[in-house]
Length: 73
Image (tube, rainbow, N blue to C red; front, side, top):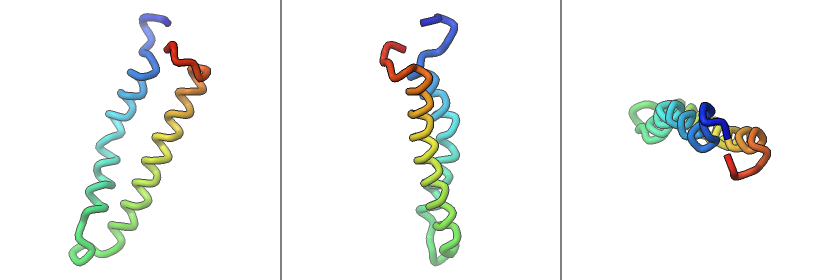
């Protein structure tokens, strides 16, 4: 492995760390009071949480394809 290139795990951690505030926003939206803020906020949070889950799955798939499915990177 090239010493100047980050390994797969480091790259994944950096991307997830940068993405985490967005994911947390949707989790906060999910915990808001329906009585105070209505159902719309909860609906947005459901969409956001689903998108975050899909993003993580796609990230895993892309990094696996990039490394050829090997675990030596």
